[in-house]
Length: 105
Figure 1 (cartoon, one colour):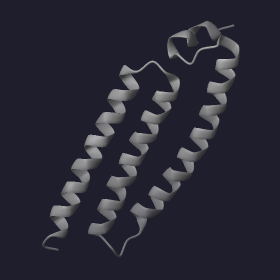
Figure 2: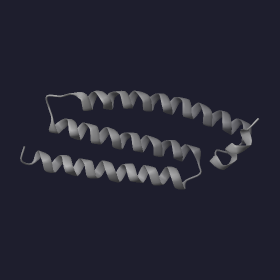
Figure 3: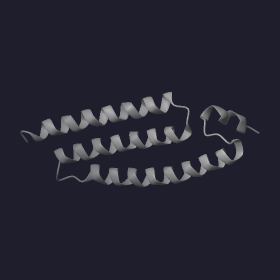
Figure 4: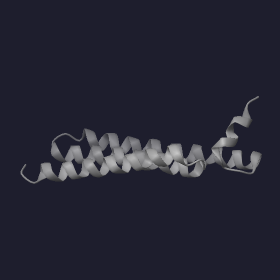
């Protein structure tokens, strides 16, 4: 496991940077579509970390199984999120999240 530990550390560092970029994008931007893309970026960073840790333990496929389920959840989240954004745009003619408080009954 000589160079494999170094590679896993690099993947985890990259996953942390991507996750941080997704968090910053979600918190700073007000466009709902950009926020959804930032959430997808964070989910992909988690997948990268899971697969990197799975490389360190090749006999156990738990990391790849979790990554597969996260991909399925991300696809469902993208479909539902996009439907909500389209309905919101038809109602308010904007995709800015600041206008979402006007949807209260």
